[in-house]
Length: 306
Ligand SMILES: CCCCC/C=C\C/C=C\CCC/C=C/C(=O)SCCNC(=O)CCNC(=O)[C@H](O)C(C)(C)COP(=O)(O)OP(=O)(O)OC[C@H]1O[C@@H](n2cnc3c(N)ncnc32)[C@H](O)[C@@H]1OP(=O)(O)O
Image (cartoon, rainbow, N blue to C red; front, side, top):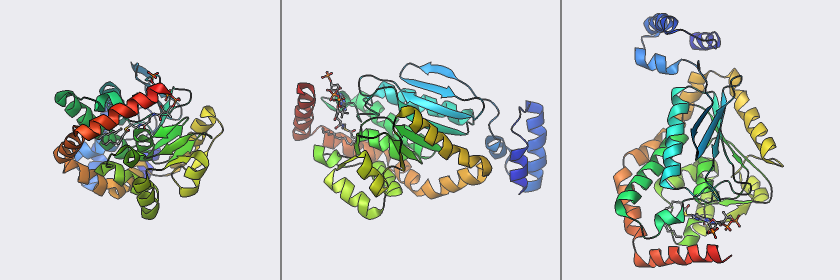
């Protein structure tokens, strides 16, 4: 009650002095740690910044909602540089206490083609380590973000593309595209954090079927199994629907919302936090198997031949 009252009266700009006084009063009342309270203060400053050419962040000053656009043509292949830009953008959003984020793509028919196969083919260990660690970071930050998230899926979203979408809390997809975790079809075992995101999105039974078969679903079928939440005819509409979803949280205490989300996702986040090195080692040893390398090479060729 006190927290809700506090939040609803702090949507205007607070000077550092006001922040300190408010923090002190509430800190005394609730006996909470001062640092935690400062972190909990609602959004006071929004920004629209060109940030990085690979990830554009555009924050609506009125709603406080950020549209985060992946911009790595032609297919938003998830490279080390794209992951680094996403990781930095997620930090900025967290620090600026935005009210919600929508992930989308600037590629006309692809949300993301998943991991950049060039990162997986004949990899250099040092670079691959940085790549994999940043991939883990992005998931931890996106899946565990304090702000609500949605994905406007304006194109195909196979493998890592689907993975980004299911790390968000809500998904709106445009018709006639494919989405799914096709890793097993490529001979890959889905990593621990990918399995967690899938189980958090669809029923355990659907997750098992989807992951073991490596199914790529049409937009319509994805809606049927709950892999996406809505269909929107084109990108602008998909963003609008995501905004509507995020706007619902305007009437909910952001502290209560964010703690509830965190507590529901905590186990999954900790599972990865506790085995990051092991997770890397498992994938590295799988990746450098000559048979896997051959499979990746052939697959890349088949994509180029199309
Ligand atoms: C393959 C075995 C991998 C083994 C790895 C082992 C360990 C890793 C463990 C776990 C991984 C974690 C989970 C995530 C995994 C992944 O994400 S793997 C990537 C899987 N991605 C795909 O299977 C998607 C492949 N792409 C497509 O199906 C299509 O490109 C499309 C997204 C449907 C778009 O089709 P379209 O619009 O027709 O575009 P093109 O196919 O013509 O592609 C344009 C150019 O982009 C290149 N390209 C496509 N996808 C990728 C990619 N993922 N990485 C790098 N490059 C990609 C494509 O070759 C074209 O290039 P050119 O213009 O011909 O040069």
